[in-house]
Image (cartoon, rainbow, N blue to C red):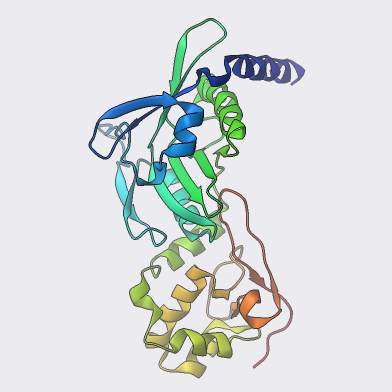
Length: 284
């Protein structure tokens, strides 16, 4: 463990020594690949609007191929190359602080301590409301990528910190949380919010913690109301615990900022795991 930490510090020192030597390569809207110093690119380029600088590979015989995620945040599709990446896209899409998403928009290049040119293409970029950014990879297991991925991690963490951003290797979420959010994601499109006034009615009915099915039935025909309930849960207007299987008796309540209490707000950095959880006893 000590040897690994020493190596990490040596690599960090090498990156600091490289300084502005880190470059960013990306494809412009016209499709032309451009290269800028990293600091300049981070300050001036809207990475959330760019197409991938390199395509996701299609591997014969592999069970999973590239696909598209429709983002409720941007109203556009974002390409993904794995199931793990799609899951992280889903979590970031629900994060209320995220305002932009893109896949593989930039390649970072640098020279290592031996003078050799190295490069890395992070899988995801997220733009936050405060204008900062997140570069992220989405490994299905922590060891994926081997030593090369770990060396790149040191470089990208340092490069992002220098411009006020962050780099993360996003860990897979708990299976139950991911399954619940996949269900809610099926109702993320605005068409599921229901007719005018329905969302306000749901906020009133679920002003205090209340079983999901009970509250939906109190509003109207469940088959018509439930899609709006799930949409509100996706958006964070209604909240419930996601670390237990979602079912008809799950306690649901309005968001803390709208109900004035009864909700413990919790937001996990990077994953956007939750927007709040009901707490306390339910009222009927």
